[in-house]
Each structure stands twice: as structure tokens, then as C-alpha cells.
Length: 271
Image 1 (cartoon, one colour):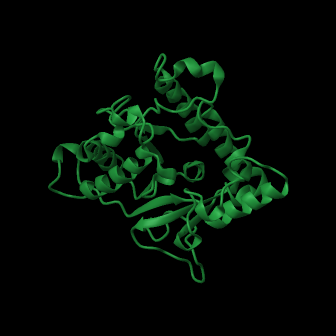
Image 2 (image 1 turned 30 degrees about the vertical axis):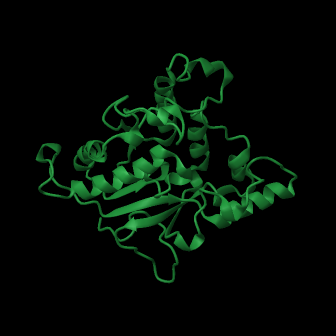
């Protein structure tokens, strides 16, 4: 996001929930939890704003407005049974909200989670479904004229994290004697890893790695970048986090001569 903002691209971030049910990593803010004051969502809006400021993104939106869709928690937990949670919202209702954004912003490229939601979070899976449905509906001349003029998105990507990078990171950490939840993983069974052969696109954003990590640190209640998975940043470095990987899910792959992967999300799209 930082790279494309600096290159003059209009970047819009759409967030689907406020994250009300998330784990709180900062003990001093534990009172914000959903089973206490239930104020975590409001606090996380400030974290999101700080993260976007680090990346230079000025167009950040909450789908349907703040609190329109409730954080669903994980499958099998009470929050996931709430009728107002994002996971249980009628797909047409939530997709229609995104259609309005797509027709207003008129993006050439849309990026979302893969069909597993990265690591299986219900809201990430729902975001994937909503995105694809909204992209299809947005181009239909017969769907909801009140939501704006039809618009066709040129390319849809899923975020990806190559298995080879995960394996290299785990090996590097194990060699240093690190023994934690991350290094205990089998690289072939890491739920958020993507087989390298499925990765279609890699974007070099190494110049923006420090801003990316600063943006992650801004999400203090939910992200710690000092160990575990994020230790990859110190051990595999820019290859793990300074390069970002994607799978082209919709649109035409545009490879440079001799290249195995695209190097730009806008490859093949006329200026």
C-alpha cells in the first residue's frame, strides 16, 4: 500500500469489522474486552488510523459504517453465533455495501484474502466471499442502479505467503535455538502458507519495509512484531516481508519476457 501510494495510485482500504472480539495483547487494555466494557472496537479504530498514517493511506473505510458488521470471533465460540456478526450476515447485504464502494472508487485492482481467509478466520473467509460477489455485482448494469454506475474490476488478487519463505524462516530460527509455537510448526502444514507454484505475482516493496513494520506495531492490541512469526523479518528479512506475494484470481496474467511471476499488480492494465 505504501509503495503504490507513493507512486500516485489511489489506495482504498475497506475493513469489514471493528475487531471487537479479538485477543488483547496489552494487559493494561484488557478492560476493553467484549466481556468487559466492550470498547475494543472503538480503540482499534485509533490503531487502524495510526497504521494507515504510517503507510500514507488517506482513504480508509469501514464496510457499511462503524459497527455495521460485528466481529464474528472464531468458529465454535459464542460471538460466532450472534446474528449481527459478519460471518452470519446475508451475503447480498454485505456485498451490496462493497458494490457501492467499488462503483464510487472504480478500482482497476482489488486485493482480498484467499478462500481460506489466510488462516481460517471466519471474517476473513467472509471478506473473500463478499469481495468476489461484490466485484461480480458491481459490473452488472441491472443490479442496484442506486449504488452507482456499473464498474468492471480488471484484476482480483489473493494475498499469499509462499511455503518456501515460511520454511526458510523456520529453519533459520531453529538454527538459532528458538523454540516457540512458530518454530514448532511443520512447514508443509502451516495453514497460511501457499504452495510456491500457485504464487503468480511478487511485488518488491523493500524500500517500504520499515513503514510496514511501523504500521503493524500500531496495532498494539492484536499484533506483536517482536517474536514468533514476525521474527521472520529479522531472519529472512526483506524476502519475507519486503516482498509481497499474491495469487491472481481474476483477470489476465501479464508476465514480462522470461519472467515466472508478475512484478506489479497493475501489469497488463493500460494506463
